[in-house]
Amino acid sequence: MTTYSGTKEFEGATFVNVSFKGATLRFADVSGVTMRGVDVDGLDIDSHDLFFGSLVVNGVDVVPLVDAELNRRFPGRELQKARTPEGLRAGWGAVQAAWQTTVLDTPPDLVDAHIEDEWSLAQTLRHLILATDAWLRGGILRMQQPFHEIGQIFTGADEMGFDMSIFRAEPPTYAEILAVRAERQRLVTDFLVTVTPELLAEEREDPWGRGDWRPSVGDCLRVILEEEWAHLRSIRRDLDRLR
Image (cartoon, rainbow, N blue to C red):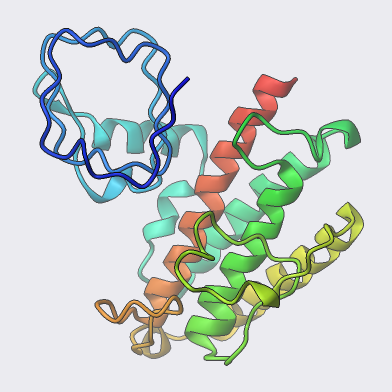
């Protein structure tokens, strides 16, 4: 199977009577793609950015429908968009309760198991440690080096010039992951206890150094909630398949 990586040669291209059956697209930009008269049986799309745009199927934007269905499946998920301290506290409590259920229900033999090219439960929890470090310790609290050494960085970070020496090469034990994760969860909980509307409105720097966006403290907290819900959905999907 041929692999195309880091190419823009297909931008603006037209494909006629071509088979993409069984093809896999990962970390690909398919924005603005038009598909007409296509067979989409079994087409499986997973996009963390889905809710920031539109996805039109047979003339219907299905993004609001997907959003509503995920809110039904994950009670409390709708609070990831909360604008008040009370709403954010409730949203955080809901997603942490959902995560506790998933962690407790996962047998030891599946902790490190994963679907091809996806993260395991252990790796996912490490990434959530990193997300909390980036957006709370880095973005909100403005710590110069906010990252724990066991954090799981996203794919392509090294190519973006990120200092990978921060992170430990040897994988941590699951017990260590759970301990650091619990400590980071407490940090968010403790911060939300005293947060005020005025603090939520304060402006911060994007912790990933993208100068085109200056998030508020509230924005940073909403990113944390979005990360928590998105990765909970993904790992539950994969664990169901692994079982």
